[in-house]
Amino acid sequence: MRRIEPDVWAGLAILLVCLAVGAPILLGAAGTQVPRPVWGVLFVALLAASLVAAAWEDRRPRRAWACYGAAVVLGWLTILAAPGAGWLPILLVFTAALSAYVAPPWAGPVVVVLNTVVIAVTVGLTGATSSQIGLSALLYLLIQVATLLSSLATIREQRMRHELGEAHLELRAASVILADTARAHERLRIARELHDLMGHQLTALTLELEVARHRDGPGARVHIERADRVARDMLRDVRTTVGQLRADAPDLRESLAAVVRDIPGLDVGVWIDDDVRPTEEVTMTLIRVVQEIVTNTIRHANATSLRIRIESTPDRAVKLTSVDDGRGSPQLRPGNGLRGMRERIDAIGGDVRLDGSDGFRVTARVPAR
Image (cartoon, rainbow, N blue to C red; front, side):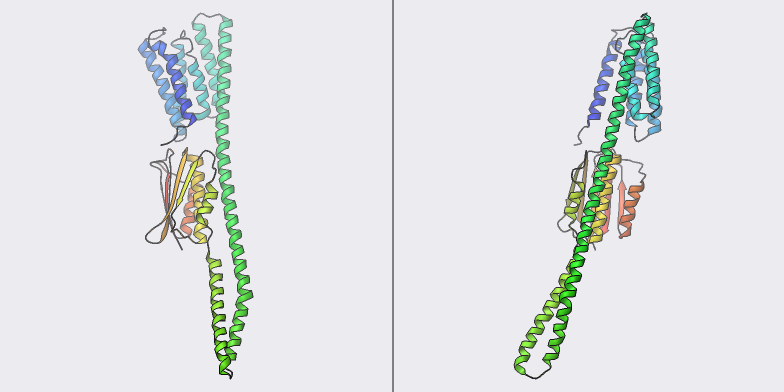
C-alpha cells in the first residue's frame, strides 16, 4: 500500500480548517450579505476549484492555472458576502499559498496584495474604524507573506531533494560502470600477458617435443609423448582461461545494488533471477536502463516505491520489468531520457514497452548473448 506523503496530510489539514471556518455560516451562526444557500454554493465552489487546481498541478498546468484563478475570485466573493464571519479571511491565506504550486512566480505577490485589499474592504463593511481596518489588513498581509514564503521554501527543498537524488543516482551509475570497465580492462591485460608469457612458451615446447619424437630411441619416445600431452593440455587450459577472462561479465546483481542504494525519497527493490547470465554489453545496457527508470521515477512519477525484476525467458532472452506506485501518465509522451533508453535497447537488438495507465511500467527484452 502506498505511503501517504506529508503534503497529502497537510492538504487534508487545510481542508479541515476551511470547513471549520465555514461551518458557523453554514449552520446559521453568522450572518451573510446574500442568501445563505448562495453563500454555500460560493463556499463549495471555492473548495472544489482549489482542490481541482491542486490535483491538476503537474498533469494539466493550464487547467490548474484557470481553476486557481477561479478559486481566487470565489474566495473574494465568499469573504465579501459574509463580512462578520470572524476567521473566514483565513481562506484567502490558503489561496495565496496555493499560488506557489499552481501559478507563475509573479502571481503570488499579486494575489497577496489583492487579497489584502479585499480583507480591508470586508473589515470595513463591519463598521470597523480605520485603525482596526489597517491592523487587520496588516495582520493578514503578514500571514499571507509568511505562508507563501513557507510554501516556496518547501517547493525549493523538494526540487533540491529530487536533483540530489538524480545526481546521486548518476554518480553511482557512473562509478559502477567505471569500476566494471576498469575490471574488464584488467582482465584483458591479464589475458594478454598470460597468453604472451605462457602460450608462446608452451607452443615452442610442443614443437620441440614434436621434433624429438621422430628421433631414434624407443625408451625416450614414451616420455617425450607424455611431455607432449602435458604441454598440449597446458596450452589448452591457458587458451580456455584466456577466453574466460575475456568473456566474463561484471556481476549484474552487485552492480545494480550499488546503483539504486540509498536513493533519497524512493524505495527501490531489485530482484534478479539466478539463471540470468548476460554478457558485458548487455549488463552495461541494463545498468543504464535501470538508471534512467529510477531517474524518471524521481523526476516525474511522484512515487515512493519502485520495483524492478530481471528474469530469463524461454527463448533465452533477458526480460526487465519495472513498476512504481506513482500517478502514472495515460497520455505518455517520452522525453529525451526515455527515448535514449529505447535507443540503447534497440542498439543491442531488444525492444521496450512503456505503460502509464497504472503507475508507470517499463517492460524491456534484450538478448542474453
